[in-house]
Image 1 (cartoon, rainbow, N blue to C red):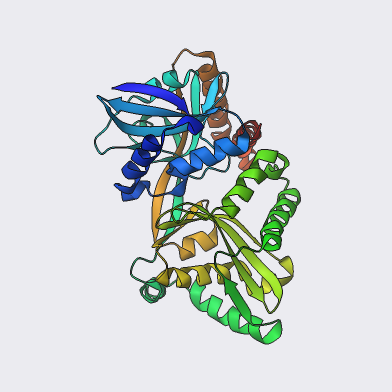
Image 2 (cartoon, rainbow, N blue to C red):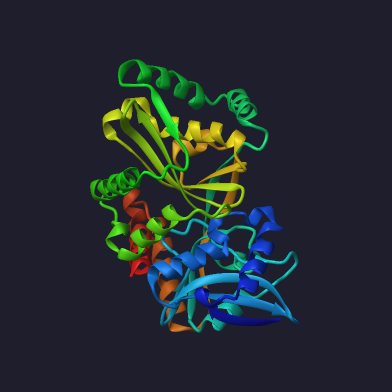
Length: 359
């Protein structure tokens, strides 16, 4: 097997089509974050050729693709820290040594954060695991609602009650899918930036390429890839808005925000409920809520996808040794009886990774 690396924007139409075909042939690879359109959209937003794609070749056939943003010493997933899934999109049965991929990218180390757990190439290098929560409504919303009720989960019943309460007190809830209202899109970004400030997180939108990427995705009209804005108004007031990424049959929850003045009505949950009902008549059967141990994700989800964090590279490479030392410090801290302070090194590493990815 040969591995050739090309800039994402330099992929030929035939390669883009082949990548899409390989993805469509395997439902577990259906996330829009694993598509060629995602890698190329990120490359266009970042305005350079550092988003590159390792293309696996057997004979004359392209049998696998994986993109990365390549730096001087390290590589990371294309679009990180906004890329919620990573993985090798390949023909069934294709195997590759992850260290060969790192070597092909011309770096010492590849860091990843949401690698598909079943990705055999990267599984040996995982240093942690999360669960991405998924809502499967392939049998329809009514069947899904009955399933949640049978499981003893009351989130949808509570949503119905709060919807009636909102209608009485502030205005009839009005749902919109694939909204093209620029002002509502801008409000999502404003709400998220306020949330970042309030919680002391890095504001990802201070980096210009992130806003360029979102705006491009918002303006797309492709049937199998792009951004989708869902909104919920109470009367004429915007109560909640979600900007998600969609593929051919998957919607991936991405940026979720609401007006704090309507907090008591849980407008974000009401909007998720509207989206799931809307999916009954749409070509989408799965709403992926992403990783994160949040109550609303646990209660809405009826399926899951394991994802892993880790790094891979030549064992003696300086960049690999530095990363090993960082993980060693994390393990040592977590083994000490320091309470919440035990998690500080892990949080610091995640924050540093987020900062580096945005540069």
